[in-house]
Image (cartoon, rainbow, N blue to C red):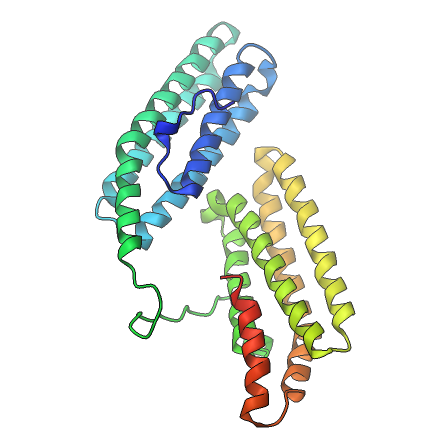
Length: 305
Protein backbone atom coordinates (compact mmCIF):
# COMPACT_ATOMS: atom_id res chain seq x y z
CA UNK A 1 0.00 0.00 0.00
CA UNK A 2 1.33 3.41 -0.93
CA UNK A 3 -1.24 5.63 0.80
CA UNK A 4 1.57 6.45 3.27
CA UNK A 5 3.77 7.77 0.44
CA UNK A 6 3.52 11.26 -1.02
CA UNK A 7 5.31 13.13 -3.79
CA UNK A 8 6.97 15.46 -1.29
CA UNK A 9 9.06 12.48 -0.11
CA UNK A 10 10.74 12.03 -3.53
CA UNK A 11 14.49 12.64 -3.56
CA UNK A 12 14.92 12.63 -7.35
CA UNK A 13 17.18 9.55 -7.17
CA UNK A 14 15.07 6.83 -8.88
CA UNK A 15 16.59 3.79 -7.16
CA UNK A 16 16.37 5.36 -3.70
CA UNK A 17 12.80 6.54 -4.28
CA UNK A 18 11.73 3.07 -5.41
CA UNK A 19 13.23 1.53 -2.29
CA UNK A 20 11.55 4.14 -0.09
CA UNK A 21 8.20 3.34 -1.72
CA UNK A 22 8.75 -0.35 -1.06
CA UNK A 23 9.47 0.39 2.60
CA UNK A 24 6.19 2.27 2.92
CA UNK A 25 4.41 -0.50 1.03
CA UNK A 26 5.67 -3.08 3.51
CA UNK A 27 4.64 -0.95 6.48
CA UNK A 28 1.19 -0.67 4.86
CA UNK A 29 1.01 -4.46 4.52
CA UNK A 30 2.06 -4.78 8.14
CA UNK A 31 -0.75 -2.46 9.21
CA UNK A 32 -3.31 -4.59 7.33
CA UNK A 33 -1.97 -7.77 8.88
CA UNK A 34 -2.56 -6.44 12.40
CA UNK A 35 -6.29 -6.75 11.64
CA UNK A 36 -6.16 -10.17 9.96
CA UNK A 37 -3.68 -12.96 9.21
CA UNK A 38 -1.88 -12.41 12.50
CA UNK A 39 0.19 -15.54 11.88
CA UNK A 40 1.97 -13.74 9.02
CA UNK A 41 3.12 -10.81 11.18
CA UNK A 42 6.56 -12.24 12.14
CA UNK A 43 7.33 -13.05 8.50
CA UNK A 44 6.44 -9.52 7.39
CA UNK A 45 8.47 -7.93 10.19
CA UNK A 46 11.49 -10.09 9.23
CA UNK A 47 11.16 -9.12 5.57
CA UNK A 48 10.88 -5.43 6.45
CA UNK A 49 14.00 -5.67 8.60
CA UNK A 50 15.96 -7.37 5.81
CA UNK A 51 14.79 -4.83 3.24
CA UNK A 52 15.76 -1.91 5.50
CA UNK A 53 19.29 -3.33 5.81
CA UNK A 54 19.59 -3.71 2.03
CA UNK A 55 18.33 -0.17 1.48
CA UNK A 56 20.72 1.32 4.02
CA UNK A 57 23.64 -0.55 2.43
CA UNK A 58 22.70 0.82 -1.00
CA UNK A 59 22.45 4.36 0.36
CA UNK A 60 25.79 4.11 2.12
CA UNK A 61 27.34 2.80 -1.11
CA UNK A 62 26.15 5.95 -2.86
CA UNK A 63 27.58 8.06 -0.02
CA UNK A 64 30.98 6.44 -0.51
CA UNK A 65 30.84 6.83 -4.31
CA UNK A 66 30.75 10.63 -4.03
CA UNK A 67 32.67 10.94 -0.73
CA UNK A 68 29.66 12.48 0.99
CA UNK A 69 31.01 14.61 3.88
CA UNK A 70 28.05 13.75 6.16
CA UNK A 71 28.20 10.01 5.47
CA UNK A 72 29.28 9.09 9.02
CA UNK A 73 26.44 11.07 10.63
CA UNK A 74 23.95 9.60 8.15
CA UNK A 75 25.16 6.08 8.92
CA UNK A 76 24.67 6.72 12.66
CA UNK A 77 21.02 7.50 11.89
CA UNK A 78 20.71 4.17 10.11
CA UNK A 79 22.36 2.28 12.98
CA UNK A 80 20.06 3.95 15.52
CA UNK A 81 16.97 2.92 13.55
CA UNK A 82 18.18 -0.66 13.16
CA UNK A 83 18.76 -0.85 16.93
CA UNK A 84 15.27 0.51 17.64
CA UNK A 85 13.67 -1.82 15.10
CA UNK A 86 15.50 -4.83 16.58
CA UNK A 87 14.31 -3.82 20.06
CA UNK A 88 10.69 -3.61 18.89
CA UNK A 89 11.03 -6.90 16.99
CA UNK A 90 12.20 -8.64 20.18
CA UNK A 91 9.39 -6.97 22.12
CA UNK A 92 6.91 -8.32 19.58
CA UNK A 93 8.31 -11.84 19.95
CA UNK A 94 8.01 -11.65 23.73
CA UNK A 95 4.51 -10.17 23.74
CA UNK A 96 1.40 -12.23 24.26
CA UNK A 97 -1.77 -12.04 22.21
CA UNK A 98 -3.10 -9.23 24.37
CA UNK A 99 -0.08 -7.00 23.77
CA UNK A 100 0.63 -7.90 20.15
CA UNK A 101 -1.62 -5.23 18.66
CA UNK A 102 -0.10 -2.61 20.97
CA UNK A 103 3.46 -3.52 19.93
CA UNK A 104 2.49 -3.61 16.25
CA UNK A 105 1.04 -0.11 16.56
CA UNK A 106 4.33 1.05 18.08
CA UNK A 107 6.33 -0.55 15.27
CA UNK A 108 4.17 1.09 12.62
CA UNK A 109 4.21 4.55 14.17
CA UNK A 110 7.98 4.36 14.76
CA UNK A 111 8.71 3.20 11.20
CA UNK A 112 6.43 5.73 9.53
CA UNK A 113 7.52 8.67 11.68
CA UNK A 114 11.23 7.89 11.40
CA UNK A 115 11.12 7.26 7.65
CA UNK A 116 9.29 10.48 6.85
CA UNK A 117 11.58 12.58 9.03
CA UNK A 118 14.74 10.85 7.79
CA UNK A 119 13.81 11.20 4.12
CA UNK A 120 12.70 14.82 4.35
CA UNK A 121 15.80 15.95 6.26
CA UNK A 122 18.73 13.62 5.69
CA UNK A 123 18.03 11.76 2.44
CA UNK A 124 16.96 14.89 0.57
CA UNK A 125 20.08 16.69 1.76
CA UNK A 126 22.23 13.86 0.42
CA UNK A 127 20.24 13.71 -2.84
CA UNK A 128 20.93 17.42 -3.45
CA UNK A 129 24.64 16.87 -2.80
CA UNK A 130 24.74 13.79 -5.05
CA UNK A 131 23.02 15.57 -7.96
CA UNK A 132 25.34 18.57 -7.64
CA UNK A 133 28.38 16.29 -7.71
CA UNK A 134 27.07 14.41 -10.75
CA UNK A 135 26.43 17.68 -12.58
CA UNK A 136 30.06 18.68 -12.09
CA UNK A 137 31.50 15.42 -13.44
CA UNK A 138 33.15 15.64 -16.90
CA UNK A 139 31.07 14.11 -19.70
CA UNK A 140 33.69 12.20 -21.65
CA UNK A 141 36.20 13.66 -24.09
CA UNK A 142 39.99 13.74 -23.91
CA UNK A 143 39.99 15.77 -20.71
CA UNK A 144 37.87 13.28 -18.77
CA UNK A 145 39.88 11.39 -16.10
CA UNK A 146 40.21 7.68 -16.65
CA UNK A 147 38.85 5.44 -13.94
CA UNK A 148 41.44 3.27 -12.22
CA UNK A 149 41.20 -0.34 -13.40
CA UNK A 150 39.41 -2.63 -10.96
CA UNK A 151 41.36 -5.37 -9.28
CA UNK A 152 40.57 -8.86 -10.53
CA UNK A 153 37.99 -10.66 -8.36
CA UNK A 154 39.38 -13.41 -6.13
CA UNK A 155 37.41 -16.11 -8.02
CA UNK A 156 38.99 -15.12 -11.34
CA UNK A 157 41.82 -17.21 -12.76
CA UNK A 158 44.23 -16.45 -15.65
CA UNK A 159 43.15 -19.64 -17.42
CA UNK A 160 39.68 -18.09 -17.84
CA UNK A 161 40.97 -15.25 -20.05
CA UNK A 162 39.67 -15.18 -23.61
CA UNK A 163 42.23 -12.72 -24.94
CA UNK A 164 39.49 -10.21 -25.82
CA UNK A 165 39.77 -7.41 -23.21
CA UNK A 166 36.12 -6.36 -23.37
CA UNK A 167 34.90 -9.92 -22.83
CA UNK A 168 37.30 -10.51 -19.96
CA UNK A 169 36.22 -7.26 -18.26
CA UNK A 170 32.58 -8.37 -18.46
CA UNK A 171 33.32 -11.81 -17.05
CA UNK A 172 35.33 -10.37 -14.19
CA UNK A 173 32.42 -8.11 -13.28
CA UNK A 174 30.13 -11.15 -13.17
CA UNK A 175 32.54 -12.88 -10.78
CA UNK A 176 32.63 -9.74 -8.60
CA UNK A 177 28.86 -9.86 -8.30
CA UNK A 178 28.94 -13.61 -7.55
CA UNK A 179 31.35 -12.89 -4.69
CA UNK A 180 28.76 -10.58 -3.10
CA UNK A 181 26.30 -13.48 -3.05
CA UNK A 182 28.89 -15.70 -1.36
CA UNK A 183 29.78 -13.11 1.29
CA UNK A 184 27.55 -13.50 4.37
CA UNK A 185 28.56 -10.02 5.56
CA UNK A 186 26.86 -8.58 2.46
CA UNK A 187 23.60 -10.50 2.83
CA UNK A 188 21.62 -7.26 2.70
CA UNK A 189 22.81 -6.67 -0.86
CA UNK A 190 21.83 -10.10 -2.17
CA UNK A 191 18.37 -9.30 -3.55
CA UNK A 192 19.50 -6.23 -5.44
CA UNK A 193 22.64 -8.03 -6.69
CA UNK A 194 20.68 -11.01 -8.03
CA UNK A 195 18.28 -8.73 -9.90
CA UNK A 196 20.91 -6.40 -11.39
CA UNK A 197 23.27 -9.27 -12.24
CA UNK A 198 20.51 -11.07 -14.16
CA UNK A 199 19.91 -7.95 -16.26
CA UNK A 200 23.66 -7.42 -16.75
CA UNK A 201 24.21 -10.97 -17.98
CA UNK A 202 21.16 -10.94 -20.27
CA UNK A 203 22.38 -7.75 -21.99
CA UNK A 204 25.89 -9.14 -22.30
CA UNK A 205 24.61 -12.39 -23.81
CA UNK A 206 22.52 -10.56 -26.43
CA UNK A 207 25.46 -8.33 -27.40
CA UNK A 208 27.74 -11.37 -27.70
CA UNK A 209 25.16 -13.16 -29.85
CA UNK A 210 24.85 -10.20 -32.23
CA UNK A 211 28.60 -10.23 -32.78
CA UNK A 212 28.58 -14.01 -33.38
CA UNK A 213 25.76 -13.68 -35.91
CA UNK A 214 27.49 -10.84 -37.72
CA UNK A 215 30.70 -12.84 -37.90
CA UNK A 216 28.96 -16.03 -39.12
CA UNK A 217 30.21 -18.02 -36.12
CA UNK A 218 29.34 -21.72 -36.83
CA UNK A 219 28.51 -22.52 -33.18
CA UNK A 220 26.38 -19.39 -32.65
CA UNK A 221 23.08 -21.27 -32.18
CA UNK A 222 24.52 -23.71 -29.64
CA UNK A 223 26.12 -20.81 -27.79
CA UNK A 224 22.80 -18.95 -27.70
CA UNK A 225 20.98 -22.04 -26.40
CA UNK A 226 23.44 -22.19 -23.52
CA UNK A 227 22.72 -18.54 -22.73
CA UNK A 228 18.96 -19.04 -22.89
CA UNK A 229 19.05 -22.12 -20.67
CA UNK A 230 21.01 -20.24 -18.05
CA UNK A 231 18.76 -17.15 -18.11
CA UNK A 232 15.66 -19.33 -17.75
CA UNK A 233 17.13 -21.19 -14.75
CA UNK A 234 18.35 -17.93 -13.21
CA UNK A 235 14.85 -16.39 -13.42
CA UNK A 236 13.29 -19.47 -11.83
CA UNK A 237 15.79 -19.38 -8.97
CA UNK A 238 15.13 -15.66 -8.44
CA UNK A 239 11.39 -16.32 -8.21
CA UNK A 240 11.94 -19.08 -5.66
CA UNK A 241 14.21 -16.80 -3.63
CA UNK A 242 11.58 -14.05 -3.59
CA UNK A 243 8.93 -16.48 -2.31
CA UNK A 244 11.22 -18.16 0.25
CA UNK A 245 11.02 -17.69 3.99
CA UNK A 246 13.54 -15.11 5.30
CA UNK A 247 15.36 -17.84 7.22
CA UNK A 248 16.06 -19.82 4.04
CA UNK A 249 17.28 -16.93 1.91
CA UNK A 250 20.90 -16.89 3.10
CA UNK A 251 21.50 -20.52 2.11
CA UNK A 252 19.67 -20.04 -1.20
CA UNK A 253 21.74 -16.94 -1.95
CA UNK A 254 24.97 -18.83 -1.26
CA UNK A 255 23.80 -21.69 -3.49
CA UNK A 256 23.04 -19.20 -6.27
CA UNK A 257 26.53 -17.71 -5.96
CA UNK A 258 28.17 -21.14 -6.14
CA UNK A 259 26.01 -22.29 -9.04
CA UNK A 260 26.69 -19.08 -10.97
CA UNK A 261 30.45 -19.38 -10.42
CA UNK A 262 30.50 -23.01 -11.58
CA UNK A 263 28.42 -22.25 -14.67
CA UNK A 264 30.52 -19.23 -15.63
CA UNK A 265 33.78 -21.12 -15.39
CA UNK A 266 32.47 -24.00 -17.51
CA UNK A 267 30.84 -21.71 -20.07
CA UNK A 268 33.95 -19.57 -20.52
CA UNK A 269 36.31 -22.53 -20.92
CA UNK A 270 34.11 -24.65 -23.19
CA UNK A 271 32.33 -22.01 -25.28
CA UNK A 272 33.55 -18.44 -24.90
CA UNK A 273 37.20 -19.32 -25.39
CA UNK A 274 36.27 -21.22 -28.57
CA UNK A 275 34.37 -18.16 -29.84
CA UNK A 276 37.28 -15.86 -28.90
CA UNK A 277 39.70 -18.07 -30.88
CA UNK A 278 37.36 -18.01 -33.90
CA UNK A 279 36.91 -14.25 -33.57
CA UNK A 280 40.64 -13.59 -33.53
CA UNK A 281 41.39 -16.08 -36.31
CA UNK A 282 38.72 -14.80 -38.68
CA UNK A 283 39.36 -11.10 -38.46
CA UNK A 284 40.44 -9.93 -41.87
CA UNK A 285 44.12 -9.26 -42.33
CA UNK A 286 45.40 -5.74 -41.96
CA UNK A 287 44.55 -2.99 -39.50
CA UNK A 288 41.54 -1.76 -41.49
CA UNK A 289 39.72 -5.11 -41.54
CA UNK A 290 40.56 -5.85 -37.92
CA UNK A 291 39.44 -2.42 -36.89
CA UNK A 292 35.92 -2.83 -38.28
CA UNK A 293 35.16 -6.05 -36.40
CA UNK A 294 36.85 -4.77 -33.28
CA UNK A 295 34.80 -1.57 -33.35
CA UNK A 296 31.63 -3.59 -34.00
CA UNK A 297 32.29 -5.73 -30.94
CA UNK A 298 33.14 -2.70 -28.81
CA UNK A 299 30.01 -0.84 -29.95
CA UNK A 300 27.62 -3.70 -29.28
CA UNK A 301 29.01 -4.52 -25.85
CA UNK A 302 29.33 -0.86 -24.85
CA UNK A 303 25.56 -0.44 -25.26
CA UNK A 304 25.17 -2.11 -21.90
CA UNK A 305 27.04 0.68 -20.07
